[in-house]
Image 1 (spheres, rainbow, N blue to C red):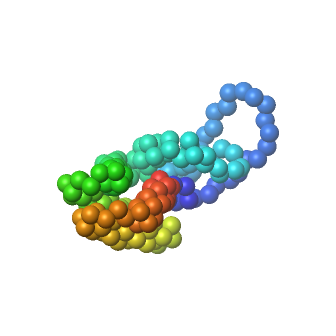
Image 2: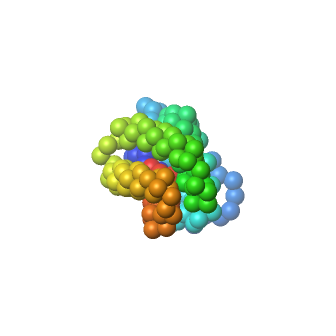
Image 3: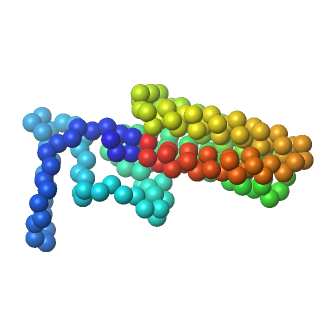
Length: 173
């Protein structure tokens, strides 16, 4: 599994070869199916690569695994709206931003639902469902406290942690 998409594991080649230009051909007898070429032994994703993946993975999923690009785009738009207004609400108590915040959460949830129903047995996706549910509950609590004129410090800190976890897991699924 890579990025939440499944593919068959094929033969491995693990030898050191001299530098040069090589042509690698991957096929099967019927010449049908999708292939992934993984280079290297270690799956490590440093922070800068994880941030690049936010842009790159939806494009790769669209071109290789036929995941609709608009689905990924709308979900990330929802995340940006929700997280952006949440961060703004931490500095200003503008109640109009609460509607934008909920619009982002609803958009994120709908797009995540479309993605989730394609593979409901994915364990990481089920964990993400729990994280999204907790995020929605915390957002409701946060917005309620903002409306009451309180500064929800604990809720705010917890909510940003859950949003970041949701975002980074979403990049990988």
